[in-house]
Image (cartoon, rainbow, N blue to C red; front, side, top):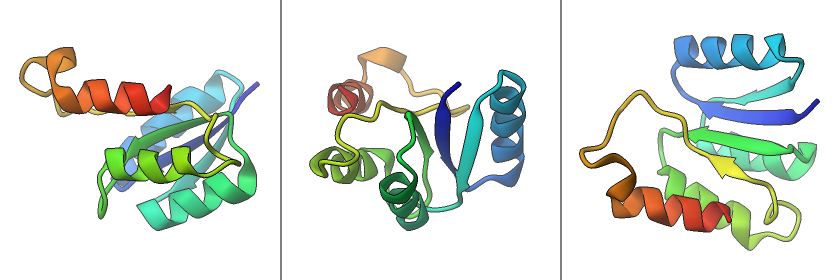
Length: 101
């Protein structure tokens, strides 16, 4: 299965994501903040990165990851319980999707 890096500052949300992903047979790597997540992405070569970040926003972290050869092709997703007004139509969603490429 896949090695998934989950960058999540909320312990309950991380625990829930880890439970779901490991139950499906995936390996989960956890990070609590952007710096740690970017280091782990470089060092552990995940197949997928899920970002819900404190400190710097997901768009900034995605730009950093997409600018580096070792992590540029890793898909990045953002799973959140915080619904944006207009959902998919918002430019932040479109930019994250385009950067995740």
